[in-house]
Image 1: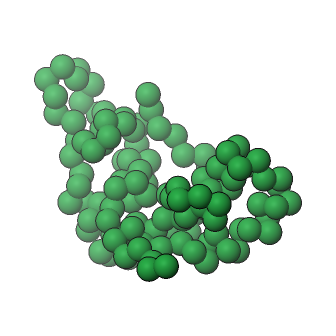
Image 2: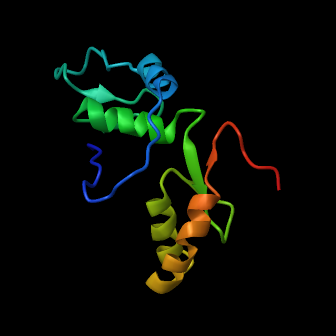
Length: 121
């Protein structure tokens, strides 16, 4: 299926040339013979398909780049590619209330780290 990013969610993606460069290095548009549609953007690392270059680049930046920012769950060892994903996880898995999650927001964002530079606890 196609991957859509919800437009009502805002992300603080620090844009620097290095990240863009990394994204461009990973760009591989699917060229499989069985694909009649030549405009399909496919992630070679996890086989997801994207309808636009923007959603595809967003995916690579948030899921596969070694220097991507990730957010750990304060209650378990899971890590997520957006703080919003942590909030959803806390609500669904750890049964936190919206008020509890609101109180944890600052701590969750403060604990974000680069995937290739994990904190030492």
